[in-house]
Amino acid sequence: MSKDTGITYVNKNPNNFDETVQLYKSVGWIRYTNFPDELMTAIQNSTYVISAYKNDQLIGLIRGLSDSVSIHLIQDLLVHPKYQRMGIGRALLKRALTLYPRIHKHLLLTDDEPFQRLFYESLSFQNLELSQPKLNAYIKMS
Image (cartoon, helix red, strand yellow):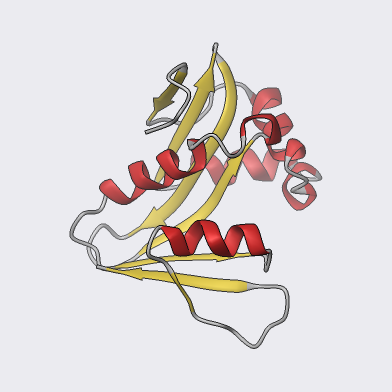
């Protein structure tokens, strides 16, 4: 649960194009923001999207892909920097994991940053320690 009780979580795609692109820009994900139409197509084609709002403003998002039986790939998890370290990312990730209680392989790839390592490992994800520099793969087996 978020430490900030004013956060609302919604199991649906964000409906504001500009607000969505701004969220991705806020965390520096320019690969997405350089191609905003592709970003929106990716979001629309995701198996699920859970959005976090504060006062009707999009401040966080998690999206993923799954076959609903054997595998769950967490594609994006982002929280606007102004709202980071408030439990929002953790709440989004926990909500995503509850969508697939019987799946025992939850995968994600992320940059190799100490804060990210601590965050995912605190949620029982194991780093697969890939040889590719600057990239970590995590798996959660349940």
